[in-house]
Length: 417
Figure 1 (cartoon, rainbow, N blue to C red):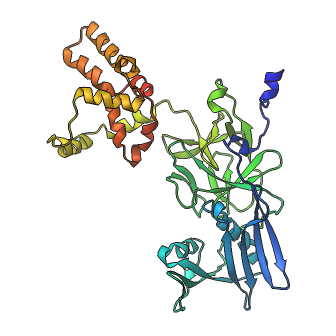
Figure 2 (figure 1 turned 135 degrees about the vertical axis):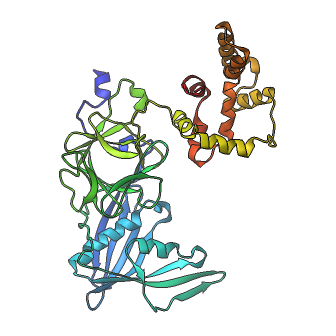
């Protein structure tokens, strides 16, 4: 009975934050209208500390225009896309007030020229033609104030007004190698390297469900035929994902893992081979990664290093390597030196106690016992020395640095082909 009580029954929903390895901040928005100062504010609060951690202040002006006076997010919470969340809430209010154009001055550090202006361009703003750019000096530091404007058209997308009682968190949805789920402005979904738009505003429901909202203010939706888009203004049934505990044969391997079940019963996942988001008939675990990220751990029958080997086992790649290193004018290493380097990589200090060296000798002896020629015995013995390449991995293969010696030696079945 105690064992059954320790794990939720099948079908039970759990908070998505339970999948994360450490407690994470939850956020909520609140709107205020100060009639004395005529300032309208969207204020951001966090569950981890008292007081506001961000705000966007704006005023209504003549001729159906508005002016942003300030956009602030506490330094501790920057980089999570919260300024964009504040702006999306502001857009909803501007639609209610029938505002046609929004003005602001981008005050950016001259040492980071174009960074803040570029951010506001991504929000739909443009520099005002022939407007005067002011420069403010404070000792050795200087700021430039760039007047910008966003003019709203009939086709402009306005998100719904957020519910002030709804808590949310900011998350990336990614694969183990760091590629993330991104949404385009038109709602198309892609899996790409981490960049602008990788954070999803994850609205937390009362009974464990979540709603995933992209940086463009649109909700992720799974349609009846399995089509996945992020183009919905409202979050209703098809935009709902139930967060359920992931049950597997080896619970220790997916401790804390959850599955994201769509309204139609399928499970959201990222295919690591095709690099696309899809719906699976079977539960796929999402485990808590680094702070505020869910990592899709869909099973892949081929180890990562095997896929990378296949990528580079081409005639063009080999010819390029021969041209680059074939003259043997680079640093040389004897076999004993190479074995010592492998031992350092695997944390061994004595050759007699090294699992890798013992394995190299045992496999070479087995090949000899089977009557194979000397050159094959030598090739089998030297096989582990390929691990030295891990010291010089590039950005594409950096994840290989975490591979264990046992995985390299016993799970790689394509090394001789």
